[in-house]
Structure formats: structure tokens, C-alpha cells
Figure 1 (cartoon, rainbow over the protein chains, first blue to last red):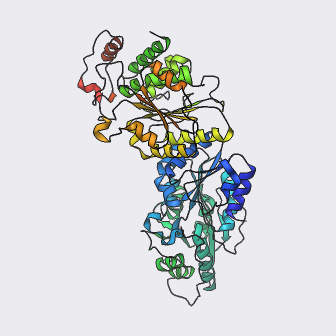
Figure 2: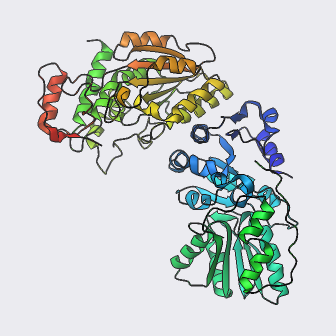
Figure 3: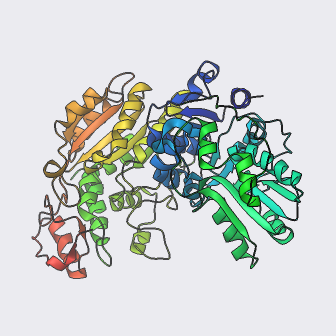
Amino acid sequence: MSYEELLTELAVNDERYIVMTAENRALIRNLPAKLGKRFVDTGITEQTMVGAAAGLALRGRIPVLHALASFLSMRAFEFVRTDAGIPNLPVKLSAFIPGFLSDGNGATHQAIEDVSIMRGIPNVTVFAAADEQDLVGMIETIWNSPNPAYLRINTRKTDYQHTPFEIGKAEVISEGTDVTILTYGLLFEQALIATQILKDQGLSVGLLNMRSLKPVDEQAILKVAGSSKLLVTLEDHFNTGGLYSIVAETLLKHGATAKVMPYGLDKWFKPALLPDVLAYEGFTGKQIAEKILGHTTNAVQPTIATPEFAE
Amino acid sequence: MSELENIAFKVRQHIIRMSTDGGCFVGASLSATDLIVYLYTSFLNINKDNLDDPDRDYLFLSKGHDVPALYGTFAEIGLMDPERLKNHLSVNDNIYWHPNTKIPGIEFHSGSLGHLPSVALGVAIDIKIRGGKNKVVCILGDGELNEGTCWEAVLVANAYKLDNLIFVIDRNQFQANMATEDLIPLEPLHDKFTAFGAAVKRIDGHSFDALNDAFSAYPFQEGKLNVIIADTVRGKGLPSISARADRWFCNFTHEEVESLLKELGGDTTTELTSETLVVR
């Protein structure tokens, strides 16, 4: 099932849903015909769309908003904070092409600070999908929650069969005593590859899908901090304010300590097609594994699929 | 004095009493007073018994800093105990410089300009979807029209044919520090809204007859956003602060408040000290 199919099923059968977009229809092309007046395209007006969503939510609706992650999180930031965050309205943000998924668009479209700024707003919850199955497994729970929610959309396909989603819970993919990779979103794909390479090198490797970034699964972080010699926070996000910060804050809050390797970005990334971006920036599974190991291997990096969307 | 003029006079007294011990945005409150009094007494279906009724009308005070006029009106029409206005700026109450929803009757908080046109837009869209008859009024400041989001909302309202939405512009000619036309000129304002697809009326915002004529024509035109440009005077009722760029936020002494109350009644003109006029 796709994002659009599930959204259609939920929205058609539940009058509370209003599907909105600031003229970003890539994920929802078939919705206008299905929803009629409950499909609202405000044009290229991210701020006004978020404000209008607050008005709709005041009236009992669940507005699900679609726009590029960069503009939803940054251009409309104060509207999210002031109109959805302060009154704690169930405004649901579907943030398109976050992180590396903006591949060739350039820095204007790179949402690599979105987790940091969205999680900084009280009441706003933050999620990221590892792949399409993970995405489809989480949206109904997120949309039925009473809070505003920011969701990093990821519709890429992997072979991984995810466990049921719970708000505030990490998904434990594997447990290991040498190293545990904590990641979210798109890089889950590469983390699976890296994990396998590390295991082939004889390491005991853990992997956590941190799909609920706020609220975060503090117990899962503390557990791997205690059981694993090294934690790696792998993210297509600035190291400032993202998962590295979340892990650091959690350890400090609980008086715990761990060796943590930040594996994120410190500047905007080189715009190119996604497979090339990952290789250039050092985020393929093989590169991740070798950086953790500190030496090269003869592992083979599987081909990385180009994205379905090039918006 | 007509009944509405009498209510507006009392509201202005409340505003003046709130302009001490910390002060308030007295000039902008006085310019919006007649608009707000007219709307709550004569146009909107809003009262203490229907505040949670989805079929009530909605008023969104987008300029926000004129909230003393709104609280003063609430006190006069039975939405708020007038005694509560004495709690202005008290940590033990929620009556401060901008509206917030802890006060019954406030639909949405404001203070950051350019937000409520879009929030009102969302409410109006939903009423249209549900086939409701309620009216949605949003009061904007003229300086607020600098914000691009106001115009986005007009564009979207036009696209969705929101003839149940009314934007009322408190056209008092001033923004915080200067005349609007000296900073970001707005005129010809009527033409701007018309060009964006709205049905526009421009009236004397201190004349209850003119307000009544304009609002009686609602909806102005089927399928069009209603816009009323209400020409007003910043500081209306107090000649000593009227239509002056340097009278924005005022924190008067108790003696000045007593003098201003007399001035409102037409008795005198107040001598104000420069220290009580605060620029924010």
C-alpha cells in the first residue's frame, strides 16, 4: 500500500480529514477527485496554508499538509510554532524530500535542520519514515494523535519488514555489543548495508530505527549506551540539533555516558542525483561501515536506486 | 448619545483605565473601538451562551494590540466581568497586551501580525464545506498589510469564493512609529483589494450609520471576499494623542488617566509628559 492509497482510504472514510497542499501534489495527485471540497490547495503559500490549517483544526478537522520539507519547516516555521504549536492543534505536516532526498535541488531545498527546529517547538511531535512500508505503518497513528506532527516523508522501497509503530518507541532492528547505529529516515537503507558489512567483519552490531524522534525512546538510547562500546548517530541532518544532539541530551539528562560518533552533516551537501550525493558525502553503506571500522574492506556496495521524485 | 455611542464611550473609558501601571497600545485600541462595538452589538451572532457553538459567528482580532478595545467591549456586553479589567497585566490573570484564548470569547491568540487572515480563512473554508451560514470577521491593522501573508489570504479567499469571510481594515493611517504612507504606502488600497478579487467598501469607521450600511450589505457580492476599509483615527476620542506618530504605546500616570477621562468627555485637553509615551 502506498502513502496516497492509505491517505485516500482514511480521508474518504473520515470527514475530519482535510488534505492540503501548497501546490505540492507529487504524493497526492489522485486526491482532488476523491475528496472534492476536502482537498484544499492554497497555492505556493506555505505560511497561509499552515495558518489556514490551524483554523480548520479549530473546527475539529485533521488537516494533513503537503509541502517541501524545507519550506514547511523553515518558511512557515513561525506559523507552525505560533498557530499549531502554541494552541497544540492537530496540524499534520507531511514534509516532502527532506534531507538527502532533495538530491539535485540545491541548498535552498535542503531540509537538514528541520528535525532540530521542529522538535524545538513545544507540543510538536517529530517522526521520520525509514521507507515506504515504515511510512504507511506510522501515519494513521500519527494523524490520530492530538498533537501537531512533523513527518519526514520517505516513500523509497526496501525489503525490510517493519514491526508495528508506536509513538515514542524506537524499532530495534538488531542488538550488538561492539557498535550500535542509531538512524532514521532515508539512511536506514544504507545503515542496513553497513550493519551487514560490519557483521561480516566479525563485529557484534546493533541497529535502531529512531522513527519517533520526538517523543524519543530514551530507554532504547540508554540501553544501547550501556550495552554497546560505540554508538553512531547516522543522519542526513546537521549534527547540531538532530539525532546526535538528541542522544547527547538524553545521556546527560540521565547521567549516563557513552562513546558517540556523530555521522551527520556540518554544511549543505553537494547537489546531485541521490546515489552520487551519498557517495560524494560519504554516506553509502560501505563508506559508513569503513569509517566506523577505520579501514577499507572488499565489501561491495549495492546499487542505490534513484528517487522516484525529482521535484 | 445613541446606545452604541454610549457603549463605545464606556469602552474607551476602559481602554484609558488600562493605559497605566504598565500601559497599553491605547491609540490603536481607540481607533478600533467603534468597529468592535458595532460588530458585537449589531452584526455578529456571538454571546456568552454560544461561544462553543460551531454555528456561531467568528471574530478574529488579527492586529491584536488593540485588544483593550475588545476586552472593554466584552465587559460592556456581558462576556466579561468589568471588574476583571483591573487585572490588566496582573500575573494572576490573563489580560495582557495581546489576545489569548484563556479569555472566553477570544477565538485565537494574536500579536504576530499577518497570521489571523489565514486562520480565519481556514475557518471560512470549513464553514463553506459544511454548508454553514456563519460569518467570519477578521480585523486587520493597516500597518499589518505590510505582511505578505495578508495578501496570500486574499488570493486564496478569492480562489475559494469565500463570501462568508469579511476582512475589516482599521485604516488609522499609522503603524508603530510612523504614518503608513511615509513607510510602506498602501494607497490606493481600495483598488489593491479590488484587483485581488475582493468586493470592497470604504467607509467612516467611526460612524455607526456608515458601519450599519456597509455590514447590512453583507454578502457584498456572491462568491467574493468582503473587505471593509474603515477610515479611523488613531487615538479617537482623545485630541491630545490623536493622529500623532509618536503616540503608539502609552503608559500614563494615574493623574493623566483622570485627565484623559475628562478629555474623553470633552471637558479639557490633557498635558502629557514625554516620559509616559513609550516607543516599542
